[in-house]
Image (cartoon, rainbow, N blue to C red; front, side, top):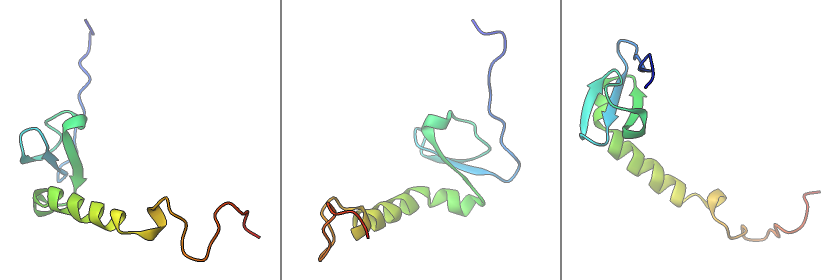
Length: 80
């Protein structure tokens, strides 16, 4: 049993979105594995899931992140 409980203390004004409870919290109340953030405002934390969805869509549609080589380029050859 540990002598000291390790607890992350947030700074005032830091907002997080808890994935387990699906709620916005000021300061990290829930474990890091269950939260997204920190966000600068409560509004930004409220939109955490929407922001993640938008970023995932951008990433999935970005041609730089696909395994297929870009048109006109042979990725097996070293760059000159």
